[in-house]
Image (cartoon, rainbow, N blue to C red; front, side, top):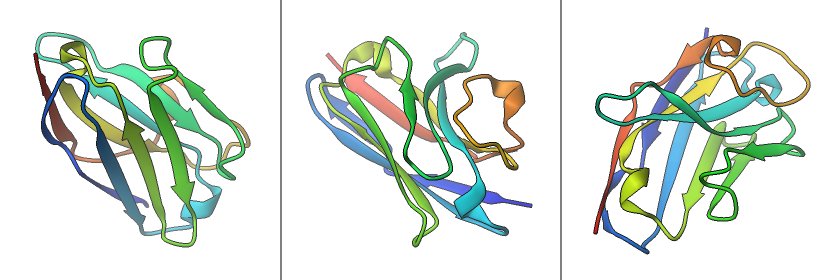
Length: 125
């Protein structure tokens, strides 16, 4: 079992930056592929970014590529999402997700076994 707790969300002006964190506990985090998803009001939860268990491979949705950076520190059981050049359309609840095993990165919701409670990101224009 893995417990995930996100933090770092908040209100920021367009063009600003935020860094989200997701702390994991409960099992061998270092062998878990991880991802960030987001859900805006009235919309489905969508993929944002993924990272392999080693951190050696990352993948981003086209909408955030070049602006967001996904990293992990396995010694601290924590992953980070650095979000730069934020836009109002980035406003959403951001969720951290982890999967049991897997050697690469994964982009589908059903591929993940554990989810955090979410953290709100609001970007004002």
